[in-house]
Image (cartoon, rainbow, N blue to C red; front, side):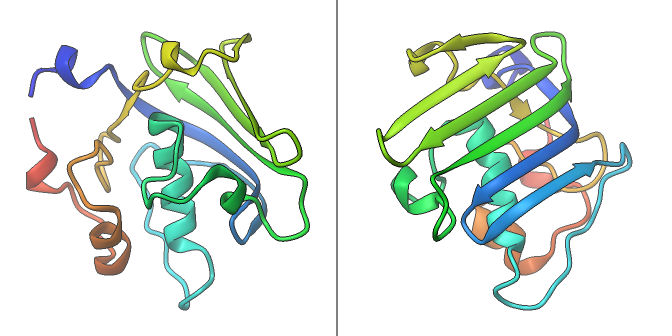
Length: 154
């Protein structure tokens, strides 16, 4: 698939998660060489990957409603990222449970018209797990893929 068909490849440099599923607050600088997420069952590995996918899809890859993604007892969730891309460098996505309202901010521009933002990014790290929509989320999470996956290679 050509780069223009899939969107612009970008590297996720930093990621912030607040009140997404069971993840209360995470702020992480992601190494350019990639990383491996390891932990016991139920600790949030798949939720972490789902949050990355949410940046691209603007919805849950597992089919959950936005209000079901909000951590128990929280008013909403927020995802923020700094990326290396020729299209965008900052993204923020927030959802408020009370008004069932989702807002997206790309490089400081806020819009309630989400169609303008969906598919803005094909996340594909130079090394490590390639996240481009071709690896089923459950497979990547359960198998602990830590090398480039041939199914998502160009």
